[in-house]
Length: 234
Image (cartoon, rainbow, N blue to C red):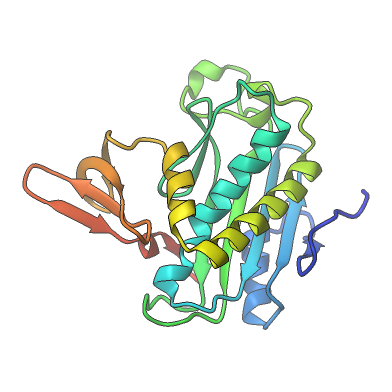
C-alpha cells in the first residue's frame, strides 16, 4: 500500500493487523510520542484510526477535540461522498449516515481532572465499511459506508481527508475560539430536542453548553453532563 500523505506535523503509523489503533495511540502517548501521531488500520470491513494531541489548555477545554474531530470527519466525508449522503454526529461520539449508526469516536486522556492540563489526549475513529449482515432489516439502526451509496469513497483518501479537515478545524479553534466549532457542530448534531437516556439520566436533549456538555431537561430540572463523562480509561 502506498504511504498515506498527512499534513505537516502529522505522522502516520499503520498498526499491525489485529491491533486497535486507539489502544496503540494511547500506548505511544504514554511512552511520550510527539503530538500529531496518527495510528491507523485500513481493514477489509472497517477503517480505524486515532490521533494523539498534546493539549495546552485544561482538560475541560481540550475535550473540544472530540466534537472537533467529528466535524472534521463530516467535512471530509462530505467532500468525498455523493451529496445526498447525510452525515450527522451523536453527542457521545457516534457517527450517523442517513440516520443510522456507522461508527463513532472515542476519547482518552492522561488526566481526568477537568482543571488540569493533560500530558496527552487521544481521539479514536472507527467506521464500518461493509454491513455486518446481508439483511439490513436485522439492524435497522446500523449501517455501513458502502451501504449508503459511498462505494467510490477510498478509505485511505478518507483518512487523509479526515486529518486535513481536522487540522483546519484546529486552526479555526485556535484563532477564533470555540464559537465557530459550536455553531458547525450544532448544525450536524443528531437528536437535539429528542428524549434520551444517558449517564443514568433521562430527559430531553436540549443542546450543549460552551464546553459541549450535554444539557438534559427532565420534568423538574436541567442537568449538565460534561463531555469528560465520555473519557475511556487511559
